[in-house]
Length: 262
Image (cartoon, rainbow, N blue to C red):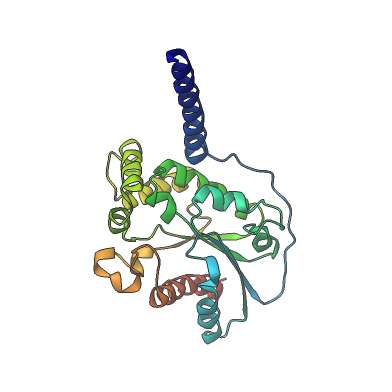
């Protein structure tokens, strides 16, 4: 009887260890640079803009606002977007290469031949504490795949969202789990936004990418969550309609500057 209990305990412990190892590897492993695929280039006068990202992009939250901003300035534009709710930067990168039959594939955005592609990523990376290097690595992969396909990346800076509020609102298990992760990835500090921003900036400079992208300074939209809660939904994570409009205005402003000076 005792021997059977020992075998059962050892078996369960082994299964738990394997499951935990798979979970940690899947969560924290870096994606490798994937095979590029060629796309054509359109030479018409339409401003073609793609958007890829997480839930901030899903449901075409920014599309109509951007179209309106361009229309007011007399610019004929076309917006193509794909957002994946809950996706971290790694998955946003991987979605670019998924077959079109996959519901989360964003390949069609790239193959629509946009002049610019807006990338909104990092909120989920920061919230679940995967680490600044993880975030920066996958942003650089996204930037490089866009550049190699003659698309100018438009990178939205990691927003100042309510990361403390969102973490405190979690159930005990998730809150504890992410606090443990933060001890490995951000010296135990839950608010890692400045660390992620700084790490990405340093990587872009180191790889010579900072001059090849359009950077959207999110502080011009919201410099502190505590000072602009009115542009966020109650969860502190997602922008409300007013916030989406302000972000769209900031993006359109930077793109129009580039267009008018070409």
